[in-house]
Length: 108
Image (cartoon, rainbow, N blue to C red; front, side, top):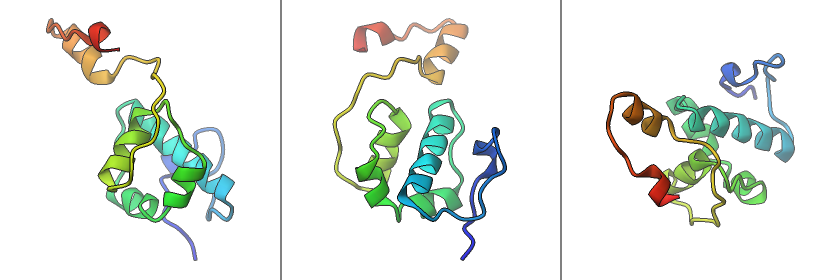
């Protein structure tokens, strides 16, 4: 069965036609979370696919990715330990560009 995958998360190579191993799936989750962490939200077909992969999320946690934790919460899965994310969220950058104070440094 061929999966519908978001090929835009494969700028470094041709997207696979299928994901056979847990490691292949973990790579895809990593790529989707990386894009989401930088403001590119996954499409609904991607969310439907990832919802089926709790075992991959559990086995290959991305503890420093806000998107990873957001997806776990969205899917209704238990929370896992978080590591500090060393980036500035896009909404904080936009607030700063538009002159709004956010207190972001006080929260991290």
